[in-house]
Length: 342
Picture: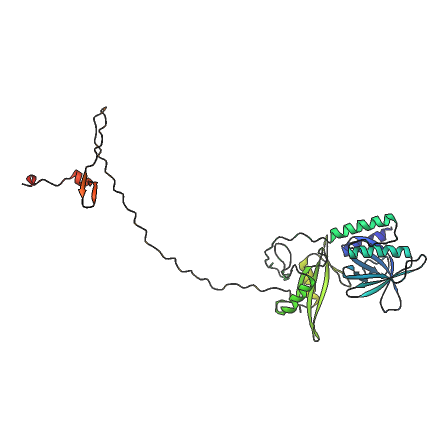
């Protein structure tokens, strides 16, 4: 591999941000077309990227194998004969042609392994090639494993002059919603007043995607764009890929490219506008605490060194309600006798 080839390879790796599983010359045409077009193809992740030649770093076409429905061979496998496969996706049907039948069998094995998440049976490959398929299958399953749920994040509008709609803490725009493509399109269709751009996870759960609604005279049109995450930022997969440093910059690019005719999808929040004073709680008077009637203690001084006097018991008097201790006032100040009044 020359220095120039290595640079091209690194550039492709940066743009796609996907692992390379297999590569080589491949002819391709849409069903109904007469002539095959020659491409240099790379199977990265679950996407087949097609380049005009081996030295181009930007792909000209791509096939998303996650849309795979079936793959059939137009003629039985034979030595010294070109192999043609019909690859049917949910949105298109293409034919792939490989001049070398052995190489064609390898292409079939890699494409079907990545698309179906299992190694097809009855492949005519060598043990080393089968071992490589097992490695690719394991790596692709790990790559497409769903990520752990993100912790709950409170979003705050980031005040800035360029209006990026960023979350000040996480850097995720407020129009991000963890929904599928179908759910995002439904949200944009049913709530047109909320906005027209949604940022969401991509189908493979490892990157991001933009779903937007554009209104034409013939009616609204839904479009979806893939956003790849790389070490230095993000790549918007367009005909001419655009690299930006953040998700906020991804959103800004779409706003500027559409001349700000589109708006981020923001769900309005309701807020209270009046501060009410709750009614005061009823106030009840404190309950009276009954006083205990205790016999008073009489303190007398005793000479130094003498035995302290014992306290006499209060006399008990008869009353209408029964017997009770005599009040202290009566004990200390008894009623005067008649002869004392004379």
